[in-house]
Image (cartoon, rainbow, N blue to C red; front, side):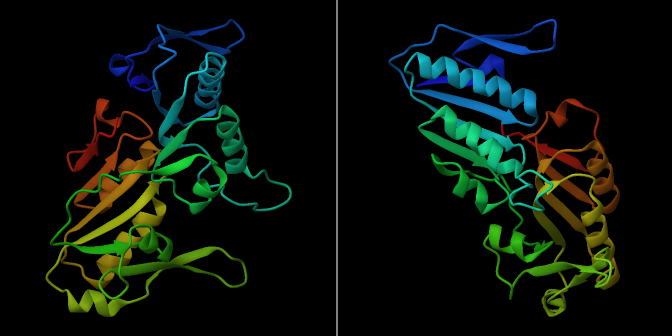
Length: 267
């Protein structure tokens, strides 16, 4: 099987180059494609440029009759998975339509955030396995019931948090633990918060403060799959003893990070 790795050129069996025209348009050129061999495309879709380059790859492969799959470590617009209002676009649907028009044989996504990804992408085959560290010996904490369901948690054995909003304004006013008895039943265990996506880290800071108020002497760790903002790294490192996330969105491991942060490589 051929591999086109748009994240790690050195790991790509299909060689390529990306040039930029004077008007800023990126343009990809692929080399030495075996038209008779199946091809696996490894990519991130973090921004419109990534998406446009991938569209060009699809055009090249389809014109040459090459069967291919997409293995996507980060999918742009995962959070915009529904119509918020008629004045806003259904962004995930737009991205999914682009992928569908490429006609891949199979699509795999790392932590797709929402079941709507599977619904909207015609050739969705399955999730890329989430590389969560072995947290045996920790009490798992989920920021909401969506995260609990995503990771197959048990509400009688795991801590579930939720956001508290002002009923009049809808503004976030804090967080609460829905099942505090689970914390009381597991008083000797350190805590680990698990979720799929971190931007600025405000939610996770609020949860850390909530856990501190309930059990001030317990160590806290956190794992998120997709880290998309340097501010989030700083926020998590200041509020948790151990911080884990992947390089699905960006090669964070090439930067100077706080000592309590570990980047898990998925590409």
